[in-house]
Length: 341
Image (cartoon, rainbow, N blue to C red; front, side, top):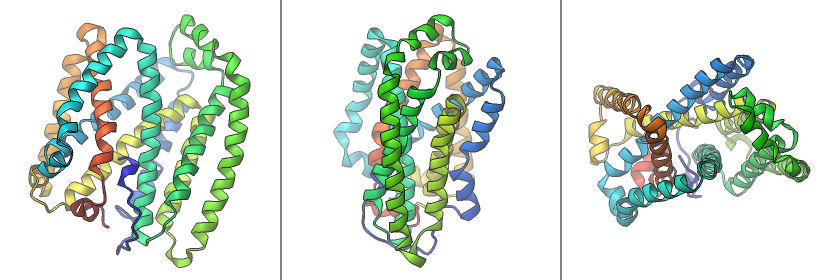
């Protein structure tokens, strides 16, 4: 879910939580068990690879959900008809061209785009909590999160042995040597880290003052979630492999939860809403969906040395990130209502 969910119009809902206090707290901190497991498995390269592969499979499985929300909703399709008609073809061609030029370049772009997208999902959820109590702190929250992310990435470039990181992932010495070519960037990364760290702390202090000014109207749900976001980025700095695994897993888990929350309460006549109107129907749809994803992975993971599966990850990932900002617009009454606004 992208930051486009945010339309800064105050609205007070009966519940300040999205799923409930316990469920929201667990979701906001769901990265932690994944990060702890991967960190504890650190010396066991094969075990780390297995867990990371599972995390990426979980992440891949959430991406096609967005296509169902688009192509199963005539109102959504009508709002951006040309985009939804041509985007798949354009994405496929762009990925094929990129892969023919440089796999490393495509991977780097995908990683950075996903990092931003995942952070903006957390921003979007913060704003849902904020909208529930009518606060207007979005203009503080977005730059604060962006600066926090820059600080975390800069810290990795400045203080983490990237060559050792590559070897811990089970890649060969050739890849490690290639990564070490980035060593001249350590000094600029250190400067960027300390600047962004200072700015990030200043923005956090300013945001907290704005939250305290709300008094009894402040959202405890948002505070718990924001603290979880800060802890997640700290985990990325402490152990990049474990932190990134938690970062990716949390994004997918949260997305499943938000989609379920939305489908459970939708009452419009879109095919996707009618198909998931009851608990039994949703169970059947989820079972069919995850069964189809598992079958697709099983059928493609070995095709052309894994290149078909890699293309699918990039293709569905690109459409998921692109479409997400159009799906979760609170200006659409049924979208806002489905999220308790």
